[in-house]
Length: 199
Image (cartoon, rainbow, N blue to C red; front, side, top):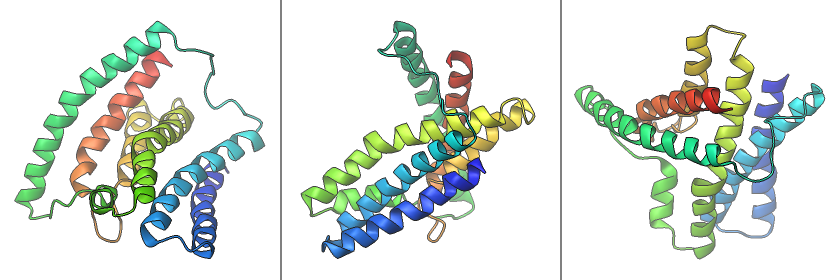
């Protein structure tokens, strides 16, 4: 039920936003950026709806203010994840080159680089830098990882959300972003380990 709510929210919200953006005459780039944000917001809305309907409204323990341990843990996770992800990315790109898979970056970065609209640039930047990281952590770490932990073998609770997290970064039609798949799996595992250790 929780997965159904989450996927339904992710499917319906972009359609509604695209309909509204089309009605007001927004250009293609703005519609795509708004659709990306709507997809992420739909994931969160669906996840929250699923938790509320399951009578589990607290997604994560909420505290006011940041504790020093949280900041130190975040910095430590970043410092550990960055070199590991860079090395895995280098190896992954080498493997993809060996099997002759084109190394095209994620579509969002191409759109951002070629954007001629200030509004589209701001929307895409907000989506990539602010909205996506928060939504991805809530869905994949606080949602999927927390749900799987204790229900499946330990290795699967760390690996399955990381693979799903990475899969969402690859365009299924064009395979754009496949160069990021391997490093993102590793990043997802590192973030899950950090989440498990620090809460």
